[in-house]
Length: 390
Ligand code: MG
Image 1 (cartoon, helix red, strand yellow):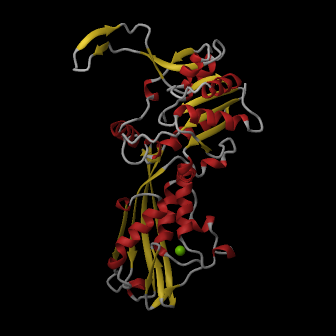
Image 2: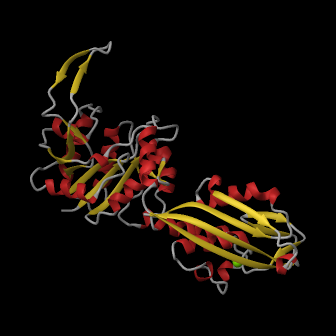
Image 3: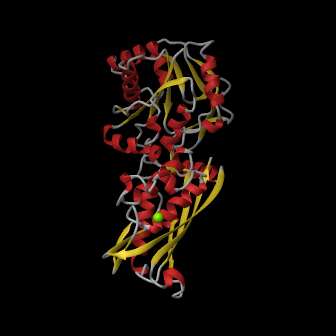
């Protein structure tokens, strides 16, 4: 049985703030990226199609950067005006692919906590039913309430279940059902199981998961963020770098060009701040050092801007599912003065790392005219980085 997944990220829901919820970060990682990663972590899933509005294509590509090295992840598919239309767009994209799947899982991007166990139950349920959705029996008593807030009755709940996703279907059957609904002018189905029921396809239910809830409101996102930020392992790394002065008229420090009476000697742009930060990040994840990844013997890095070294270290952190919590750099210099450039440096480092400037600290000190820094022979930088790994 070949399996593909369609992840519907078309919602423009703004209940969770001005940015649609699926693009907001929880635990430092955009919700959509978590959801897609959960499906890519399942080896039985052979294709993953993310459906989003055309205007969001660039944003989605940026959110999924790196994951797209997995050949199972298709280029984002342009969705339609409704959830149902986006579902059909995803199905048509799979139908047009070289090898359409036998089974498709259709999932809401706003449910990032899909587990292996849940996928096992859903895929296993396909042995007994042609289509399967996860659901939870309603536990609360259900009241019927009138327009002025008075209870007019109690709804028996013993046959009521709350539907979740991913919902699994035989690909050919759900594709035909979707096409039929669109042709019939039906655009109002709120999940694919409802559409399947309308088309006369039998749908079975397996036990869902409370953790697999749909994150809809700002409160949902805040709770998920809080939960995730307690998880994982905190790692710390340190870095240190020195460069000597040479004749010139500016230096690069923490990604900012500063006019100065001399320049710094080095194979690259000799930005001691970014070099120390790069080593601190690499240290936190135990992934060698800057000289190993960007050897000075390599002509490619002659005169190179050092932001790419730091960006590469940040990418290595992300590839491990990690997030940079904060970085702190201390520049050792008699001159130039750092204070006037401090905020620009914090902003630039934050930009390179993809974190807020409030998580970046830049400090400076002289060495009281002692040593090589004191004799103005060069500059040094110390850095520390904190990283949270899953
Ligand atoms: Mg260096």
